[in-house]
Amino acid sequence: MEVTRRKLLQGMGFLAGAIVLRNLAGPEQALAAVEDFPGYPERFGMLTDTTMCVGCRWCEVACAQANSMPPPAALSDKSVFNKMRRPSAEALTVVNRYTDPADTKRTVFRKMQCMHCNEPACVLQRARLRLCLPGGCAGED
Image (cartoon, rainbow, N blue to C red):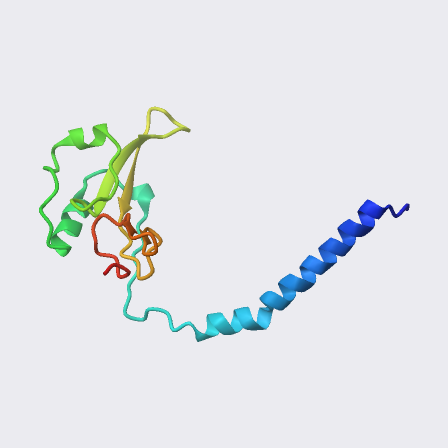
């Protein structure tokens, strides 16, 4: 094996980078940070089996009621599926209809909702640019 100047410098650079990274964030510090995080014990999570969704949109109604918002369009109105919707200030939960790419004769429904995050990435405080449309994020003034 021939050692060229290029290979030697690459190896030294790799070694130096590994040493720097090890000193910046050692496993002890990373583990201590995780162990010290108290979490959010008052928060709840929700698991939804989206494979069972039939597009009834009752989750939109329940979300609107739980958040004291006006009810969504009539559940019998299927025209809401004609365009892709995203959660907004008017609707924190929306259901969209898609065609299954594996079986084009099959329709698939997918629920999207605001996550009510404690540390929302969609709220950029530094730039004072608010992307969380509902305004319910914990990080907002």
